[in-house]
Structure formats: C-alpha cells, structure tokens
Image (tube, rainbow, N blue to C red; front, side, top):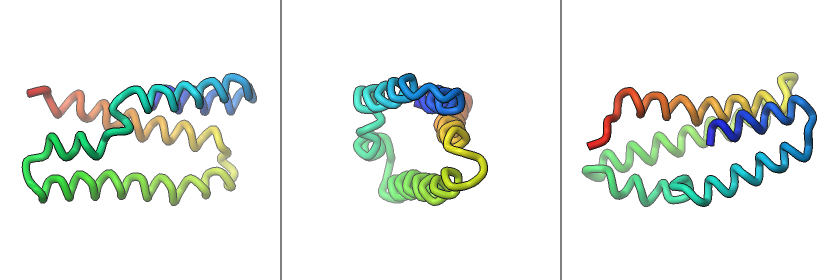
Length: 106
C-alpha cells in the first residue's frame, strides 16, 4: 500500500494523469483484495483482552485523525499534493519495517 501511494505521488509530481489514475485504481483494488479492509476484524482476533483492543483501536484512529488533519494543510500549502502521497506512503511503510523487526510470527 505504501509503495502504491509513493508511486502515486511520483506520477503526480511528473504530471502523468493517466498513470495517477492507474495507481489510484491499483491502490483501491489491492486494498480491497487484501486485509486492509478488515483491520477491525483482525484486531479483534489477535488481541488478548479488552484493554489491548482499546489501545489498538485508539492508536489506529489517532493516526487516521492526524493524517486527515494535516492532509488539507499539505494540499493547500506550498508543499503540494505529491508530498502528501509521499508522506502517506511513508506512514504505511514505517509500521511494516517496525513489525518486521520487532513482531515475529508466532
């Protein structure tokens, strides 16, 4: 997901509208085809108790709130729309690296 967002930002920067549309459509298809759309169900299955479930959902909702608060600022600011997609892609890739290094499969 992060790679597709970074690719979208690159195509926006290069002013390639057809490829931007293709990368957006690819993002939606991949998101709906993988576990991205069932994150709430996944959290309910892997947590041990109610406190961890609450903390997991709080963390997820807070990160979405921060992203939505700064998205409008980045779109209307001097940085541009491509920087927004680069940052959103980075927000997706950082947890992948963290989970790969510190959360091993059981």
